[in-house]
Image (cartoon, rainbow, N blue to C red; front, top):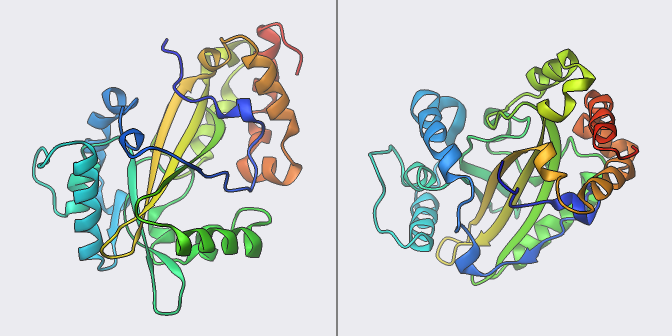
Length: 277
């Protein structure tokens, strides 16, 4: 097992705060920790299930500009293979999903184009064209405070700045294309507690935002990183930090993330490691 590249639970439980921090442009998309494991399956999804993983409402100029920016960051001028749109061509070169938010004449930022192969329990068809309020409606406490904060961040974002944040959860199995949480929860329900350490995985979303200088659209990237929970808890103090984060989440956020389906397995896994949950 590799050492997981990201352990966001070391900073505490998931919350509503955006928690955005600047990242150097050379560290934006490289190194791509998931390329070896995910690029092949991702490209297969893009070819065979395109209607589920790609959508665009116009945004031709925005897609072209975003693709050029991604290829520039990868220091390559062309893409492998032929793809219907520049955004898909660029998305086929990175493990990250690429989503474009465009500000309308009404001042609202809407999802206008996306190549999304690693959705964490949402369907692209349900969110296309939605403003920020629609995208975050299921999040407890998100409306209106979180939406207003994110909108202000998008409005004020400068093209030379890339911001990064992390989100995380646990799941049963290592699937990355998960438009629904139901199959994973069913798998968790079938998993005996003595198999918890081998069935549970840490799922991390590394998210970034950057503004395109020409069109003014915001490019939102999502890198899904999936590692066995036992690997994530192997480091010194990691299991204790994870246990504290797991128990420290608010009831509303735990309900939103569906953690009740995994609570018994998580506690069993921590017991197997000799920790108390």
